[in-house]
Length: 475
Image (cartoon, rainbow, N blue to C red; front, side, top):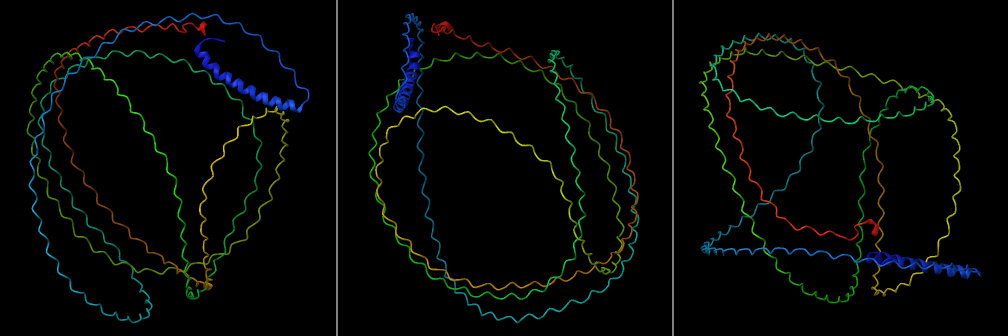
């Protein structure tokens, strides 16, 4: 055994676990000894281990230098008090509204007279046949659009100075090549599947027969009156619930101790001033552009000729009668399905070996009995509801009348050909734009001033070296 405190904390739960396991095995052994007359002989005891040599003591840790105290913060000046606000004068009293006059009573509405029965609607007369539509006349040709006058020539723009030459960037380093990917191994060849059997051809779907006509619907009779239900009995009241016992008072916690005062932080060093920024050179004056010439006036738009009158539409012809649908043929039977081969028998699995017997489980101590619950008062019996009356039988639903046949649609007359559109005149060619002047050179940017250097970092004391478990041989 070792004398290290860490090994002691590890071995304590291990010794407890070994003691519990020995107790469980002892209880199982006693049961086993009771069943058999001849118990097993005891095992020989293990020899005693020699004592370990004492370990040298750990060297003492060096003391750390004391930390400097923080300087005390200066007191803040007292802020002046705000002046007292003057009181606002009170609002004048609001006058009361005059009382509203009472409205006169409304006169009673007269009794509405009964309306007479509506007369029977007469049938619509047959529509007359419309005459044929006349041919549409041709439109007159549109007038020729006049040409626009030529645009004036713009004056030449002033010449801008040339831009300065851009400095060249350094060449980027060459990217190293990646190693070559390993060759992918080839997959084994796919086995050839057996050929599928050919299915027989599907039969042709027969046509459906014509739909029969529906008979006329009879008049629907009225439902009988609903019976009156009896009144429900009153619900009894539940007894009062017993009061719960009072809870014990909660004890007070002790007061928390006051924290010590925090030391003041030292003042920060002053930040050095940056050097003055140099002045930028003045930009050259921008030349003025010449005045823009005025555009010529647009010519007046010519008026369009008067639109001709549309001819009358022709009469709509009658639709021909719809032909009757032919009867559908009988559906043929499908051919017999071919027999599939039988599946092979599944092999049986080998028998599973028997597991060794588990040790007997130790008995747990008996649990304390729970206190008895108070008895609640019995609930009142629920009254029975009266039986519902039987509903009257519904009348039979009448059949619907048959639908009339739709008339055939007439053929529409052919449309007349549209007249050809006149040719569009060509636009005049645009004048060429003058060349743009060269852009002037911009002045070079001044160099940025140097940044101030950061203050040096103070030297902190070095950390002491730990001598505990430096070598792995001590473990």
